[in-house]
Amino acid sequence: MDSVKKEPKEYKKENPIGLFGDHLNAIATGLKYFAKPQRITLKYPEESIRLPTGYRGLIRLYKDVCIGCTLCAMICPADAMKMMTQEGKKLPIINYGRCVFCGFCVDICPVDALKETGVHDVAFSNRRDLIFDPDKFNKNYDVPFTGVVRKVRAEVDEKKGIRYVPDS
Amino acid sequence: MDVEVVPVTGELNVGPQHPGSGHMRILVKLSGDIVDDVELDVGYVHRAVEKLGENRNYMHLIPLVERPAILDSVHMNMGYVMAVEKIINVDVPERALYLRSFAAEVNRIASHFYGIGILGIFLGHSTSFMWGFGDREIWVHILEALTGARVTNSYVIPGGVRRDISPSIIEMTKKAISYTRRKLNDWKKIFFNNPTIRARLENVGVMTKDQAIAWGAVGPNLRASGVYFDVRKAEPYAAYSKLDFDIPVYKEGDGYARSMVRLEEIEQSMRILEQIIKDIPQGPILSERFLKQIPPTRMKKWVEGQGRIVLPGYYASFRPPKGEATSRVEAGRGELMYYVMSDGSAKPYRLRMITPSYRLIYVFKNLCKGVRYADVVSIYGSLDYFPPEADR
Image 1 (cartoon, each protein chain N blue to C red):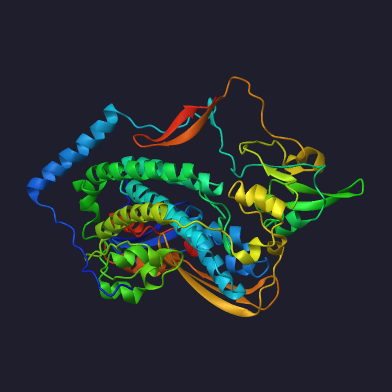
Image 2: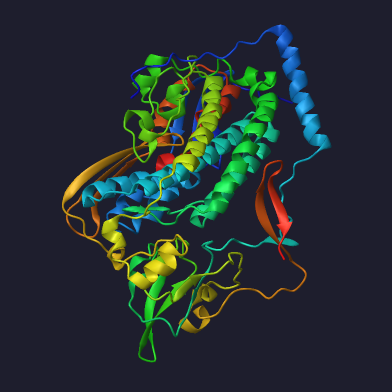
């Protein structure tokens, strides 16, 4: 604790003349943003964010690289990842209904057989589809560019806060 | 036709469907417009973190302890990891300590903007709700770049942190600080100095210094009542002993003072971030003890190449020695305490988690006595009470 204790501050109590000015100030600020809106809304279905590298999105498996050491299944906090035997080889399967995207499995994999992809917006029509067997888990999720969705990057901007720039 | 006369006394249910920032029922006993008593029915978002803690191993608990307060997850995570580190007796390198403080302060700003936004919408000021969540987005974006997730970062692990800071994140933070400093001026004009807001907050829910201590208030609510207490100063953890910052303390103890403390803490947090950016030492971000367990090829590729820790197999299921530890951190809403007891197995024997919102239940109940009904929401918002955090 600091040896010098600071005296608690007191805020200024209002005075009637200042009150009017404060009202005007609040309205003027509102008008300022009315004239020059500072929108950071992402028009989602038309625009979609290109997630930065290292983003903990959906995970994919490299089946040939995996050595079946079961470390990923051991560290999984949600029991989403389990091991199964396929053609005599142990391989992980993942249940995205349970996954919390902590990325521990990716970090602990000793041979980099698991990778985080930059995809997090997926939908499933069936709960059984959420369980990815090694063959399904082995694919990349990156959706091919169709031209309908504009990919944008979010950038911190000094004036606007968040700015979306088109991703080339 | 008979007209039913509204009784002079009665009860009103506020909630349980999301009266504010989580599910909770407030049973308000009214006589006329004056609140006689409130009955807080908490526990709708109870997740049994403490009981689950006895059935999970130490690493599994990191994402779990974050869940009670997802928007304040770095603090939740850090407090737990600090307790575990005391049991396994590991030293954390300097750079990792600075990075912990960095993530924690970014998270504190995001959490306070969230709190102010919720307070705004409670008072019917929807501009501040939009602004609060919009300005929070920038800080969440920095956390996303640093940790890989917007919330529930799971960033702090026993022995260090998971990822290193990059020059682009530092650049981003500088821009965010300069933006937020400018935006806070407009915040003051439209919200904090706005007479309509002041009328709703001044002299509402006044908590004197003695009451604040007796009722066990923590964090910004305690400091707004004139008590100079902050865990970052009282028992410095992470890099706070080397950083220079002030603790805003107000005398009044009303809703406005609590909001002003939050506003000034945002300013102080940005001051801390600037110092961290300037002073952060070079070095490893994980304890040497674990770092030497990483194979050299992977060390070169991930840790040195991308500033990203790859976990050695130790973490999958480690067994700490027998022992117990407590840790305290100053979370966004106040003091957060953990007690972890190890019996030598891979799972903790006992995990106790005392969250700041848990302590606010009693404060909230006492503050509501004798106020007007419309002030209940004002008190709720100004306390920044977060039901999931209280229920755990």
